Image 1 (tube, rainbow, N blue to C red):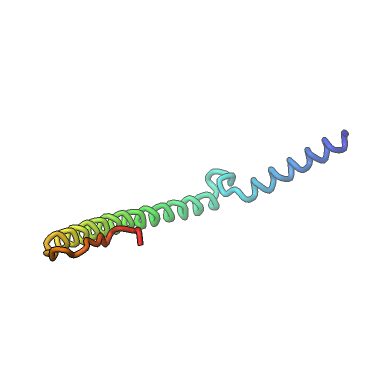
Image 2: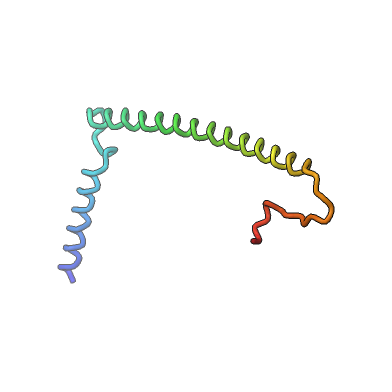
Length: 96
């Protein structure tokens, strides 16, 4: 039983060493590694902010285009004269 506890303790210590080596935040403050990582992190966030802004503008533009097209379609279909006795067909009906 004591052997299992010692083995578990060794595994925990090794896991902490691996996590500390892989974690860039654990680098000592003021070292060059942390500064370059922070600069790279800031650049990534700035790029993501620019991409997010472009996506939002694109979505807004597409929404206005879709609304415009739907208005044109509804105006066009409401102005089409229907001959008496012609069956009414709903182009937006999904039951086919």
